[in-house]
Length: 178
Figure 1 (cartoon, one colour):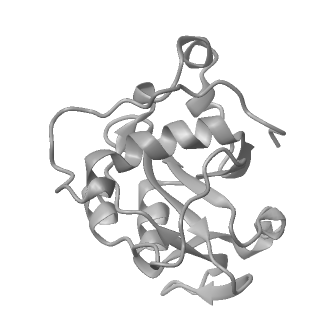
Figure 2 (figure 1 turned 30 degrees about the vertical axis):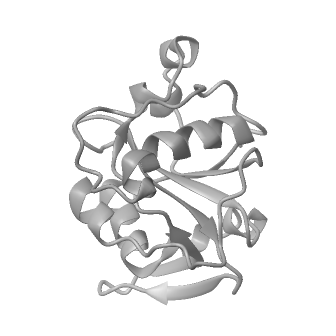
Figure 3 (figure 1 turned 135 degrees about the vertical axis):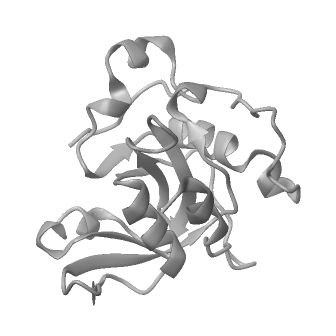
């Protein structure tokens, strides 16, 4: 699935849900296809045998979706908030079991990693060294990712403007990296 198709299939936040800024949250690291599949049905998913990571995520937590294989390089594809309802297991067409949590995603567009990453973390290979799964991230960094992803698309625009809306702050630290 292309990043554009993944973007088009996202489920919007219900009117009563808003992303709380400044609070820590999670980065879901997966392929463009896995993230697109999760966005299409409104969840974050990991193979069922790796469900321990999802057990640490609570309703109300923010989740940013990061694909190392997106847009010819690493990019963030979406940001959303975990909804109440708890973890459930779903099986795909190939019979694989997935542990899932319901997530409401904001309308967004793909943003290259370089648009939100500061130079020091880029030199450390931040995006390329993240393990597939969930990694804890500090609130300011999630705010920067959300600002870059939502840009004009989240403000009622069409999301097709060619000027990248850079966030007011850049990713500064990982918190409790697993």
